[in-house]
Length: 161
Image 1 (cartoon, rainbow, N blue to C red):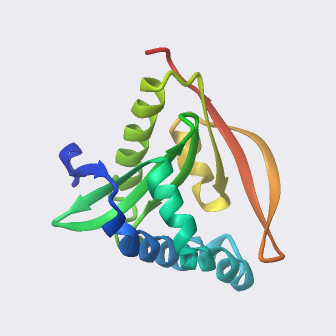
Image 2 (cartoon, rainbow, N blue to C red):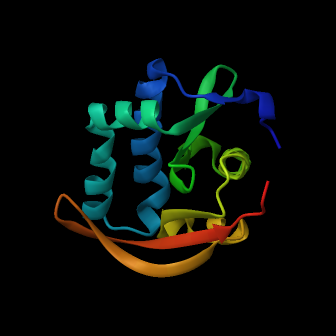
């Protein structure tokens, strides 16, 4: 694996621009095989809501992975049991970034005493989550700016700490 654990750190407010850029670029690049242009545009537009991102950064366990002083991925845990975000930079797909992020989030969830970790994941990410031991609970349709997007509620039972 190219990235070492000590490159994971808690996100800071000054990371916001990089996080927003990764969010939008990854959706536009990596998810286009599973979603149409209208869905991609609606989903990626979420990068622009600065106040929402600031709230997530300050109220969730939010981490980033750095490689050579560049943020190459991020993830967040909400309320100890919900994996809210997990994105690896479009140029770092398949390099272990998502696995590294996931492992850190799972450790934190266990540390917080969570029995079951849940997430709503895209079609693109579903296979990765299955490899991490998640099971699909249900397929669901969410609406972003009036545009229907399919995703999956997934969960994983965690060991006790």
